[in-house]
Image (cartoon, rainbow, N blue to C red; front, side, top):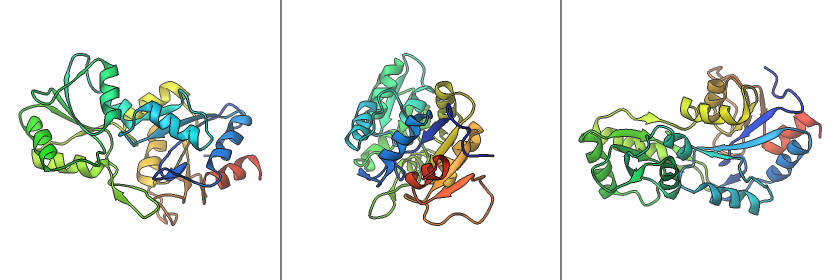
Length: 255
């Protein structure tokens, strides 16, 4: 599969490890996005990071030179599609999840939940683990925004939302339904915005490469985040490998 089908192609780009590392911009990434847009490609940002509200993520992109209003899709948004209007939701995560489930028409509660939604939360502790797993044991559905075990930072990988989800699942003895990349809820959300063909760019073969396969898109792997060495197996189909987004875009559009 070719990486790009020319003007009109949809590019779905990850954030952590591609556009930035723990908020520090990856050199050349913003200019690469502008090159894509100038060449007629549509750009959507798809992130498994569920903690931040959408407007905060858009602002972070704007600060590094990328206009992204209406172009951000998060795993919190995908998780909210699995919640019904009027349901009571215990959020074990950040304000991005609260925003998404509230906009869905659900009600955030601290007890008596119909659903527990778990995502990344730096304040996660034993008390929150006990509250979340207790609600699930009592019958609440367990939804994870994503199952990434780690997230990339300039100092190396740190525990991600998937690690917290694993704790709640293990403590409750329940298998969660996961919304984010590479799972179908996120794919359905993105496909509804960009159509049925395109390119996924990311720094993880399991998450981003799997997401490309779920969508039926080509996959461009960049080595600026979690993955430092291209895999030698063929578990995921990779259309192109580059050091970073700028190098990948140069390869497609010409340096």
